[in-house]
Image 1 (cartoon, rainbow, N blue to C red):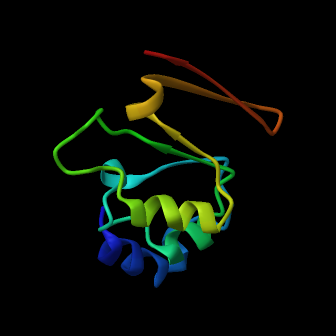
Image 2 (tube, rainbow, N blue to C red):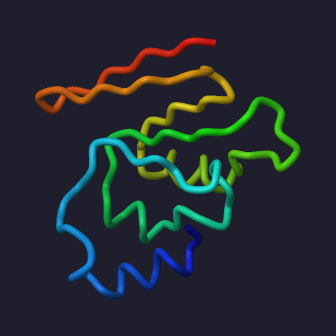
Length: 100
């Protein structure tokens, strides 16, 4: 899903729950064409997960996305750096395990 689809959904709040999320899976491997500032501000994730391959030819995740997350002080887990990632949310606490 790209920024345009995100904007369309945000303009129709009846389609979206009014709820913050614990973990947001960043769209399209962290491409700069998705996960807009408005999308992040709506969901207010406590943690972001980016699935991208090591040294991929597209340069994912985009530095723009990483900066956007950093500006909002959202911690990021990246599969290109951590390998396989398993996230668990229990009683409001977030933990994760990773395996290369």
